[in-house]
Length: 533
Ligand code: NOJ
Image 1 (tube, rainbow, N blue to C red):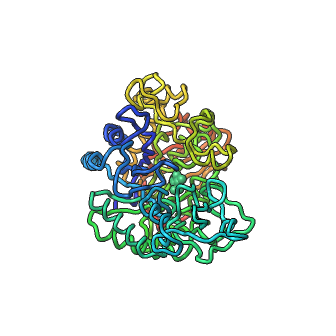
Image 2: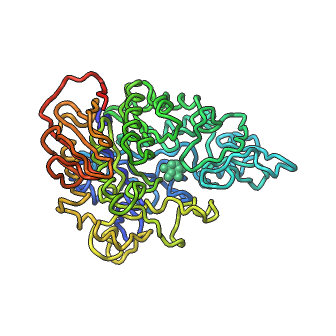
């Protein structure tokens, strides 16, 4: 099963490669860059939504689940991309957005035109308001993008949107909704896609009583620790995924689901991964963990224990299109870059599958000073201009050259968000062949990962190591060491050096560095046995 140890490269389509010069990335842009992805040795790509959409939330507001937005191309171009990706040995995962549609989806238009209590309204969550004449929203839920989660319609009823008003929530107790999504899965599986990333996988079912949440405020993509939450991670959701698994299992070729579920703990997360449910789910605890030896070790062990309990593979992810890029999260500048390189080697040595967000391999950082007039994330408006939102991690990739386009699109075109001038030195062209670059580090790491029999699925064994150094072994014959201390660590190298995130003086692991070793020995280890350090 390829997905148990795959390296999956996330493509935020708007910002990957622009083939036609409109400043926005597209399917043909991806197709033209397949050789780059093949040479990087990723096993699969996950492409963020490319469907027709009014773009109230970068395409996560889908108006038609069975077509392609003209900005991004056409269904024929999608088929061509899929064919060429497969020919290059790259699988393709597409993004499914089942929690909400766009407010321009035919169903929602129909619902607005239909009377209260109609079948058309029952596909969504419409309610009368509270207070005199129903002028107050039906409850106190807030949108994760800021402001209330309810918008009033012309006839006085309110509809629920956990995200932007342009993203009305579907009613997942409605049979028609369930059937429609199974049919959408089939539409793309029939075309040959290898899997789906499921947006807001933990949000589909709401407590039918729609109770108030009380004082609790919720940060974006950071659900409450409550396990009896009225709209996140409700038990009834698992039914949906059991039905979807039957659909994916009815296809040949090892198709996969990866759930985006921001839940309270690894133990809650693996409930989505029980036999007969989703194959994989993002493990965001690793992404959220601060740089630190004990913190990271605890997060890794807890995740491995949890996925082990249901027989699912672990997934590891450091950045995506919703969070501040990890170079910046880890401190930015030289420090952030060193830590990011080290964590990449840590992540790629762990058992399970790993996600690389476009630009991680170039060492890109969060662009924190985008001009206000280009900000497109709904968070910016919805927060009353107090939160700049997620555009800083969505800036188009620098490919080559020194024009402001950096090869993202044809010369003379301007990317939809301006890349900083310093990214000239971080372009693919600038890093290509430079052994000290982030790109060559990733290329080497992914090459070794593909060739070394110890890497990918399996178990790890912690090794004893100096304070603030994390060291573990993988069978057969591989070890990884990471120094989290703020001084170089003296280590006895457990084998011959394969790769390191910074030059390695004899017997020393520099500050914020990681190294991979071939140990030449192999123990028959019981599953994830721990040696106390
Ligand atoms: C999670 C997606 O990754 C994010 O970009 C989007 O805004 C929300 N889900 C709503 O669809």
